[in-house]
Image: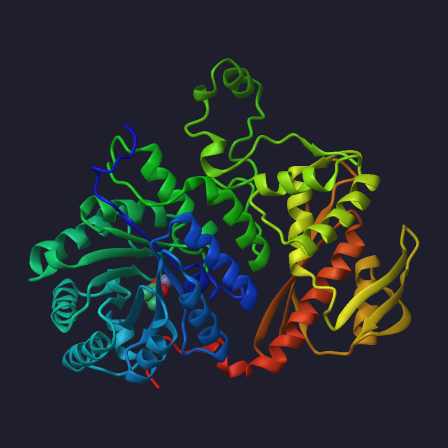
Length: 525
Ligand code: KIV
Ligand code: ZN
């Protein structure tokens, strides 16, 4: 059965930019947030949770700008259960054609204990804050955080209060990924049966993946009557992450025979968004990740390959084209021209401005000279690098030579441009990467701690490009830098420098305690 207009619509609420970005190290720049929001809007996401405006000036600015630019999606801002948060969220989203305020409070016994509110006091807070939000905006979402560990009677009571106070969407968060499918469905059914006015609002499901059941729990909630799924691209999010958008959307499409619901998502945009979120967040997608993993459509074993060659449906339940995955082939050669490159990049989802295309073209030619075959994934890595590493940043790698091998110590010799001026140094280290990083540290002293250093080969073969991500932490600020190059040491050093450039920007823009990750979620200020 195919999805059709007669089927009930499930709204897709994407929280990559709020719950996803909250994941340690997944911090995105302002421009990256705008880009991802634009892609989500274009893909047909119904509601984009663009951030948590009270958390920092940066979050406020991003939510406001996303609200101004959104063409189709409703733009939502998160607020705790207090007037200050709600007013700030409204200030940020009010520019949108369709704004929404999302306010929440933890209702389970464990969460009630933190602000030290008894059941009646919390009920009163919910009434007052939802009423306040509804006086500002007519589209209000309310969430009882940790709903799945909240007593059933109390959950019914507070949901009724929120509906009476004017909430138009009630979201049921499984904040700690604790529920399982039958229970997830049971909670939605109970609320629909027991709460007066439940039939006048939309129920949403918001699942975390701590037990690996977020997708199943979300779909079970839909079967029971929820009509909004909250999710993130690649399942990005704290701990084990959130429900993955691509999984629920494709499950609703592929198993429409037993889940007869439709969404407004253009699924052919999934792969491009997955790659961009992976690049800008620095969170690499595991190869065997459902739908968007590198191996999701690869058939290695003889039996599988034979079956697929005879009839692709023997081992494929969906087509790669459905998620926008083009067949992997040799994309381009060193004789390919600018127009061919532009066309190829468009096919891969990148619509570059002329100056950006020129820069990418120069690098593509250099890559084609060094590498026998340039694949789609090479081009994607190259564009991602171009978009991440800006030639006008404070620190630039001008020259690097390393000496490495079985006889240590390894040595690096570097020219680093700092604020437009070249500085030269050499250093030794425990391996060539360590030596190169040491050069950077000596030329640009800082106290940032290296939290993550990851290297991935973009394609097969010893001439493959390496993409590197480096996560640094300094005074509570966490930044991720990425870079790609056929030389792993160069890619590593540029990723490290990219992270430092981001740290420099963050130092000037926000006090560490204004960072979204350090905002206390349960306690109202
Ligand atoms: O997981 C959660 O409970 C949340 C709330 C803020 C809705 O993200
Ligand atoms: Zn959450």
